[in-house]
Image 1: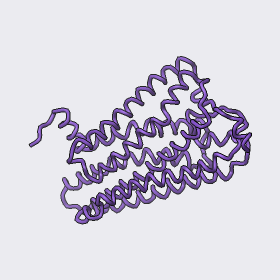
Image 2 (image 1 turned 45 degrees about the vertical axis):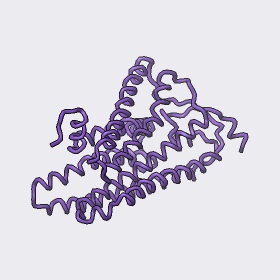
Image 3 (image 1 turned 30 degrees about the horizontal axis):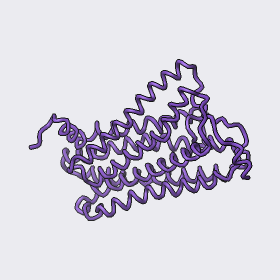
Image 4 (image 1 turned 90 degrees about the vertical axis):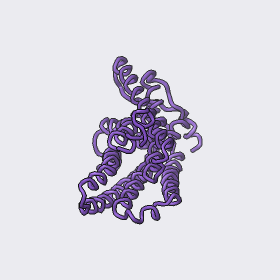
Length: 310
């Protein structure tokens, strides 16, 4: 087994098999998106840190989501950009396995953070008088640490199952990063256990949490409809709409990719879905929260000196 493992020391990511001009265009476009992702999420983190009015559970969770989005992009995009400039440049075996582990960790953590954020909105709207007691800082920190811990633990399970596999086939991975299913296709051993674990893990961290989010928002909708004031309804809807947009984007692409019928649609479609998932989602999240959230917009105006405090 050791000989098989050491026989492969690097992989080549096929990425996007396009012409040189198209690849250069994509390099420029994805570089711009990457900068916007880092800048947008960095601004969200900075605004939350600077404004004491945003030191609340809702924005504490949002800051952790921004950290995950930055980590997401930093894990996959730089290697993708390198491959667009030099398609034949390999990634080391250790680097590839590390990328797989980190991607799974951040994906699971984001799933759970979105559930935590929906629970926060549920308590705020359905139990407003008990909100401070339920969502104490101790509870918030515990929820965030638990989300990260489960993300690391589940990813370690996949890593432990992946490492013993012998890799003695083609070193070419048909993807733009070391996605676990693409890596498993290169193993020259039975990978049914690994594939079933990926499906089971995806189902447990996608379908289960998504169902709980749906239940939370059904309860939230019922509570909002009972609010007599139109202004109160509008404010309640505005605090939830951003989160719903992010949930739809994240869970929609992830469920289609990993829980669809036997990894369902053609490989190329899955590849581009994961491109959206790992590049566009982290870039869009801060835009969604800043454009649809009055607190964030007002804080940005104050920081830029466009609005004075009363």
